Amino acid sequence: MEDRLNRLKEVLEENYLPKARWWPWKNTKRQITIVSFHELDRLLFLELKADNQKFQLPLMKITETIDALKERMFCVEKECFVEAEYHPEYLSLISKLPEIKIEVISEPPRRIVGAKPITLESTNAVSMLIDDTGEKYVLKSYRLLPETNVEALMMKALALRRFENIPKVYLFINHHERVAGILMKYVEGVGDGGYPFYSHLVDYLRKSAPLLSTVGLSAKLGTIIGNMHKALNIGHSDEFYGLEEVSLHDVEYWSRRMYRYLKTILTRLDEIIARGELTSKDWMEKWRGLIDKQGSEVVDEASTYLKAYEGLDKGRIHQDLHLAQMIYIPSTNDFVITDFEGEPGRSPEERVMKEPLLRDLATMVRSYHYLSHAAVMNAYGLSIDRASDIMLKNDPTLEWRFRNVVAMVNSYLASLIGSELNVKYRLKNPREIFSLIYPWIIERSLYEAYYESMYRSEWVSIPIIGLFDPLLNSMKKG
Picture (tube, rainbow, N blue to C red):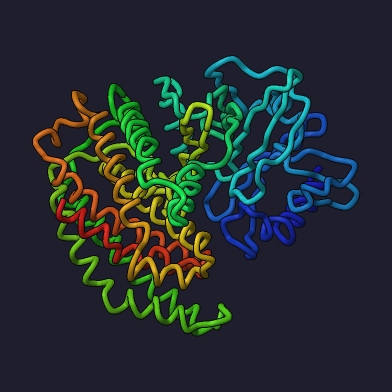
């Protein structure tokens, strides 16, 4: 047994983990410790530790290669394995292990007869399971096992509060008090939450659709976000949820974070230009020059606006709310939010921090901007760079975005009337609310530029022009 584990450990360290999509240290070898090992029938369950972080790696022994799962498979001598969540026997076997506890929220599924990946691009294992009646489920299994699984805590609270705009939650898979997986209902839709907005905006830009067709959907999103905030922040005994007063320390921390993002963006763009990572560096130098010249001034102004938050409330928010985190259901004109992991570029400590509820509205404002950029590219047949130029100088989507943002914000505020979430805001008029959203749009744009510079540098112009969006002038003035 010891020899077998040593060989398995060697293959994982040397070959498999550095290439794994979910491994935090891309293309980098790390020494691992196998903390625990269990075997049941064809299932091998490994608990790993690397750099003081805990991981789970359930494996299923297989006898033949599965083409669609080649990147999630490996062999150790004559034994071959696939990550177990993509196998129909996983759920029944994992529940029998001594270290695993199944927490049922609603009725458990029937016998699972099919399993396949929904995506292989996630840092988690996300699979579709099918039972013997044809019912479909989504199993989201976490490779990294943090002490505080923000998504699991939020999904549990929303499920128990019967919040309607998440997938139905069936059960949680717990490993030593840490959430290892969530089983949810598979939601049928036609695309992500941006689908109806993008389709309409492209038609509007081509002069074949009226301006106001989607404001009703934006108003619905405002109500959904308001109901989500009420479910996460009212009536909880666990201090993970609920409102707290914003301190001067909070404001100073948020301000420092913006400056940190700005510094990191400039450093990263310098590295991209110096290394010649892109075929043409002229446009990268252009956008780098813009944020270098005016970025500090923008952050200074946003930091001034943040000071108005001292003494107001912060609470549990989504943190990474945007249209691509949702599924659109055309039959009911409704949206289902599917991801609550928080911003992927944050540290574990920052992911659990509470922030003003209005920040979720700011990330939605940014989502409309990203979507509009894509619509301009499609409608006019433009490159990313050229579309950014147009949106910076003469944005044809400005009025469309303004109407949808106003509908979303006003509907959100209306949904909070009479609730304790509105106590410190009830004397503020809508103009003041818009000015409170403004600094978080800047903060989010900086985060996006930081993230794009790290992972998708060809997209970095989109959040950079977001810092100079003409819509922000309207929001600052209310």
